[in-house]
Image (cartoon, rainbow, N blue to C red; front, side, top):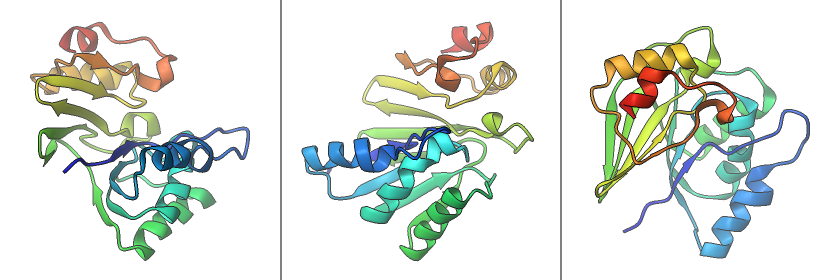
Length: 178
C-alpha cells in the first residue's frame, strides 16, 4: 500500500497566502489522496509550517514528525493543537533514526541537539526507494552540513535538495559526502 509523505508545507513571511489550501490540497484532491500518512515538519519556521495547518485540519494524518524546538507564533500553536486534538501520533526526531514503509525507508540524520539557530535544528531526511536516494537537508547552514558529513558515514544520494532554499553555499565536505 502506498504511503503519502509530506515534508514541510511552505508559507510566505509577507502574505497570508496559504499553500496548504491553495496548492497542496488541490494537488491531493486531483490525485484522490484522502489521508496523509506522514508529515515531517523540518523546523518551526513560518515558511515551513504554514501550509501544514490547513492539511492537518482537513485531512486524516497518521504521523507527525518534528524537532524539539517550538515556536510561540499563533499559527504554529494552532498546528500543534490540531495534531493533539486529532490524536495524531507525534514524534520528536533527534539524532539518527529510521522508519520503513514497504519499499520506502526514511532516515532522519539531524538534529543531534537543539541550538539557538533554528535553521540548524532542521530535520534532515533521506528517503530511499529501492536503490534511489534523495536527501532533504531543510535549512541547515554550512557548519551543520560539515558536522553532518563528519557524523554520518553514508550520505550518498542521487538527488540533493539545496539547503536553505538554495540561498546559502554548500560546504565542500557535505557536497562530496552526498
